[in-house]
Length: 370
Image (cartoon, rainbow, N blue to C red):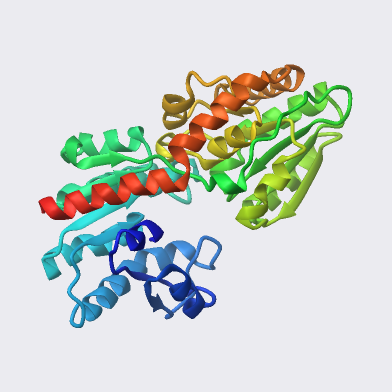
């Protein structure tokens, strides 16, 4: 939004209720249209039901506003709003650009089959990946090359897709030289949303092996204390003798780097699914930015970007293999020069400012072509 406003555009944001809307609108120079019928958000009650209903209300909100304002481009952010945007293209005759920060329905592959049967998941993924073709949109932004390939495979013109990856605010993640854990307690950190697909058999098996082989290792989970995290910690404490953890809870974005400062390794033990393979995980970017070596499961999107980067190692979707990779990283000194080079690369390519400039230029060209 900042980049759009900086380039002289009038920006109307249609979104769920937020705190201090007047202050936010003034700060960013935007016009807010808030959905207030019910509470939305990642941690809201009955989240999935609300997500299904929200696009119908969102479409109506934009259509009503369009009676007073002539919109030149509809920019949808996420699959949920893409449903509304697709319908608005036909209703208003306005070019639509869809931005997909992930393959949302793909994460459901890690849910228990009795909660989300596999045929239903496959149908939902096909529906989501088919949105651009179904509505004939002008262009698509994706979080990764892997996700771009999915839309192209569903028939959308690859030349109308721009993978922009997923950025970070470089000023909040300064580089810090690292020392190996040595003989003291090692700290393994993971931060983010901490949902089911983050905390599965791979994470549990890795923690079991590391705790057995290197007693006293501290596992730090930085993020909202979700039900998935609470259940995981209870199970790990029950099944793994000597399991030691820290769970500071939600930490404001600008303070996350402080939780990484004394860590020795960052971990990304995502379980395998179409959603995780398509995601460009911000954790990896932020670990590399601060000079923290990391271990990840072999997520396709991350491998395509960090495959040759010495700061990110890849283990299989197996707890023991992942645990051995963590132990190897704990014992290995960090090459300061290579760490700085990796950090400089993500700062140059993935800081929000250059990333968003590419995205908005693409949006302008897309709207102009349409």
